[in-house]
Image (tube, rainbow, N blue to C red):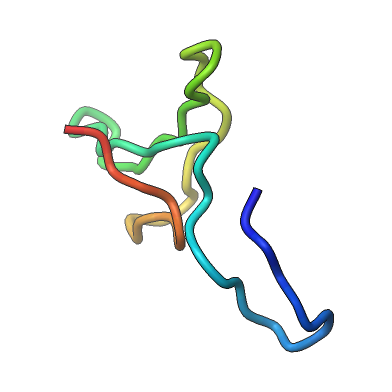
Length: 57
């Protein structure tokens, strides 16, 4: 997980390394995927990519 010191400042240092995200052209949404299991974790409600998550190719 990304580190967040000092607490309460409202931003993240570094990227989230346990997951990645890819664009689904059929639904026109970004989908987050877990690296270990390969399962889909989350889907964005809008068309803006996730913050701090690496992209799949």
